[in-house]
Amino acid sequence: MKRFVRIQRAAAFVVMLSLIASLASAQDWSWANTATNGFRQLARTVSVPPASEARPLLGPDKHPHAAQVPDFDDLIGRNKAKAILIADAKGLLAESYGFGVSARRTPLGFSMSKSLTALAVGHALCDGSIKTLEDPLEKYVPETTGTSWGRASIHDLLRMSSGAHPTASTGHKFGDPDSVLGRAILEGTMHEAFIDTMKRQDEMYRPSGAVFQYNNLDTTALAMLVTATSGETFESYFARKVWHTSGAASKGAWVVNNRGEVSAYQGFSATPHDWIRLGLYVLEQIEQTETCFGRFLQTATSRQIAAFGASNEYGYQIWVRCGPAIDFCFAGHGGQYLFFNRQHGIVIYQHATNQRLGSEGLRALMPPLIAALPSNR
View 1 (cartoon, rainbow, N blue to C red):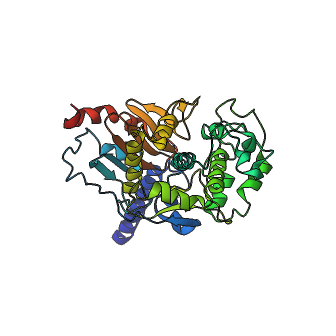
View 2 (view 1 turned 90 degrees about the vertical axis):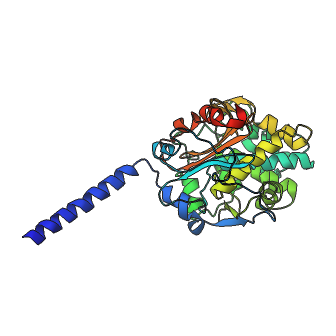
View 3 (view 1 turned 180 degrees about the horizontal axis):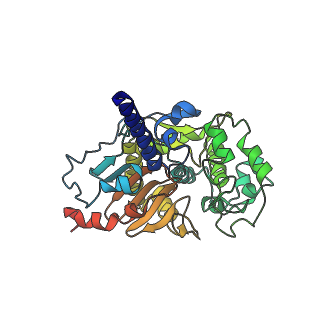
């Protein structure tokens, strides 16, 4: 009898643990574990090799001004985050990871990838292979002729205003990584060329440039532009112009469809430290006002169109004025963020995978962080 009671209690305990686990992850979307831990084994990807010389990145234990931010570690729980890191030019001011996640993971950035695609376009412009952002895409990518994307200027594609179809903030077929297009790519069943998808789905909803309409295929069109103007694959050009110059220490990866085309709107992954290196690279380049790329970044991170989503202002595939003391941000589905403060040279990275987004506490972190830094008092 006692043995039976012990078995009952053990079973009840297991059920209770299962219930707690299910409640704890209730807000996580269906690709949560895959995006954090295993998508490189699931999806088709192309690797981006690390830089020949990695950018040094001091740990918080060695940083001379390691931040003492109240309740920093608590953000992991409040935001249902899996990683939060803070850095300035010297290195990491703070970092914290959730259960089962470490600095060696390679989280998928989802729509933060859009901002990386804009960086590649900026380099193509500064190389001279793009003559002006006012040119229509079809001048460089003839197969887009007759589509919303082909008639749109590069400027309008960068600011998400191709007019191809209604905005995708909730439920549209191109709206999130659980959509038909996103699932097909991640599950390795996307056999159709992106241009064929674009032609089939083009609704020509508005004239190009008329209004902000968040559209994953606007970013896809920009990746096609980079490929056409650079004479090399998108991932190769990105590696040479962005990844290596940022001083990445590990391999990055782009998700590709079954035709080898890069999923530029949601497909890049990197270690948390290399996401930080990308952010620091952007902050350094944006201050180079004498360079073409520095001037491009200044425009890209300033308001180009009224928007709604991560903020109500949008630049070139980059959100602007994302919160108190946050000049601009890269934002992805489920709580992927790079937050930037130019004055103090601070980057905050978060990886999370939940529907609530959980950025409120993170957005509020910048002002006390700045106040906590001795060098900025």
